[in-house]
Length: 151
Image (cartoon, rainbow, N blue to C red; front, side):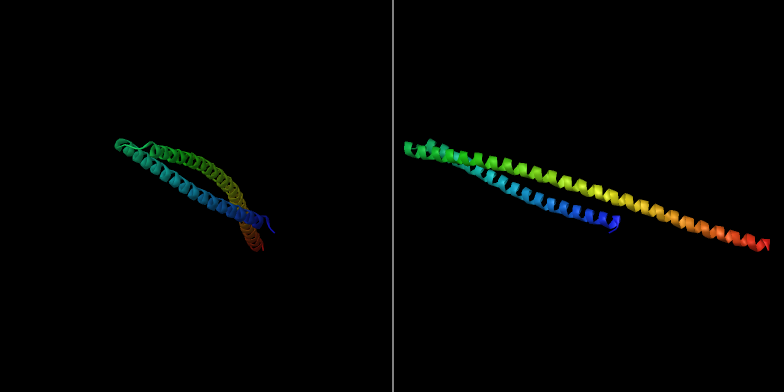
């Protein structure tokens, strides 16, 4: 297997790894949006429920109902805390996947740079070879012409 084809294979593998890392990053970002939406929904629900408690207090509320409202608000607060923690954890996973994607992109860029340099070198060598052949042909013609004139 030639060095060029090995480099092409490594480049293709790096491209696949980068693409896979990108898909994983997209999945984590999607999950992050979902967790953020759940947190927002919980926040809205908690605000609505607190407003209901305020309204009930203005209209007069018995102690048992007040206790139920407070317990439910406490459970909503606990759920909000868990949702914030879940969002923080998800954001860390997104960050890790982002770093993984960037590493794979750097690796691919390195292989692409090597391939590009190799191609430039091959083109330079080919140009030299063509120039050498052209020079040899011109020298041969010149030699034949000199030989013909000398005769």
